[in-house]
Length: 176
Image (cartoon, rainbow, N blue to C red; front, side, top):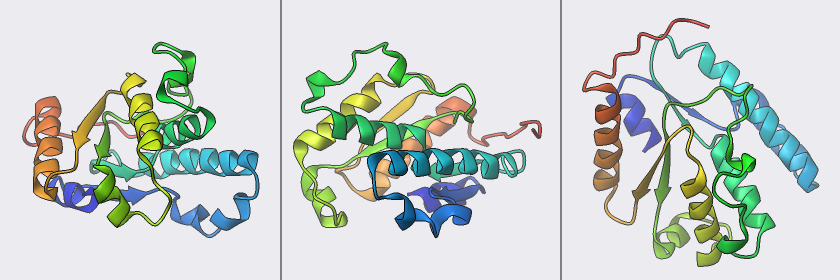
């Protein structure tokens, strides 16, 4: 999906962790603190990479701040009802981190996720992820039911982009 969107809008497809830190991934997964530190470092490195190209082309990024936060919230709470309430500061974007214009959550049915995921996956964990994303508000989150065909999900995202920025997706962003 990421590559297809980047091709459609002549943009960049970037994945987190960034290349400069990807080789260190296994070094930081000993403790929860180390994992959080590594993921935070990755987010800021991604923001730096994005700022070097965003004035030239749109950037499409996989796995950024909301992804990491929702995952940590899901691990730290037993049920969706136990998550911090709507409006909690936990759902606020960090002031010093580059903010995307739009966040998309591709929410697939459990049977589809199990086919594409090698990690243990369950309905309750996914529900906590989705609930977290529903509580994020700035930047806006587009929830896409990805249980349908790839093309359906792609066109839902494309239509939202066109609503927000028009057909051409003009990118008159001044360089940082």
